[in-house]
Image (cartoon, rainbow, N blue to C red; front, side, top):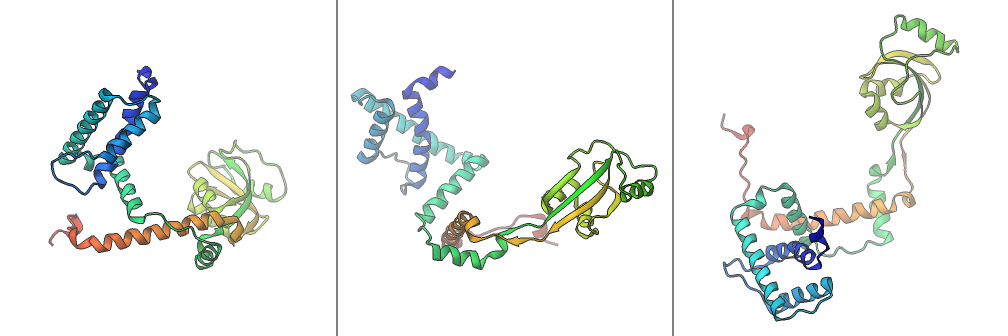
Length: 266
């Protein structure tokens, strides 16, 4: 099986599949006639020669034409059968292609545009609040939790079970804390008095005695640190605006008919 991929002709035809798909989707001629103009044929010949390193003779020229016709016919029949509506990945690919055609080449924002967008959307560019804490973990609820907590508060070393994620957590973001221990534990760590042991608190993994050593509030990130993210976000906004305008201009041709349980007659 691997041997066929070493044949440059095979690679050429396989790589050409997406080209034929895009070309047909964007073509305005929806008639049954399959047309192949000089410009497209020249492109096929050029691509073949670039990929294979061989000049196209008359026999190969006819092979390219036949292959184009075969692929075009199969593609149109696939669309007629609605196969493009059944493949989720293909649907997403077509949507992305259409978005790219609608948006065109987006202008590159300058620093003024970027700073303006950054200052207007500061809530997006924050380092989340962090919590530093340590824990003593028990897989099962200890028989006398109050006694264990008293020993910890007295400075004694208490040996529990091996904690699944370690014993010390320096400057962990709140989203990570919640992911590891759950919302209830995060709520306790947010309000617990610093440098005091508390617990035992139950989580999905077991029982925890915890001591918070530091909390840092969320803080804005400097522009220099998020410049590329700002640029990306601004470009996404520009693309969305163009796509939204395109959709609104054509919405009357595609009425929405909701067919859901919520919209069923009462």
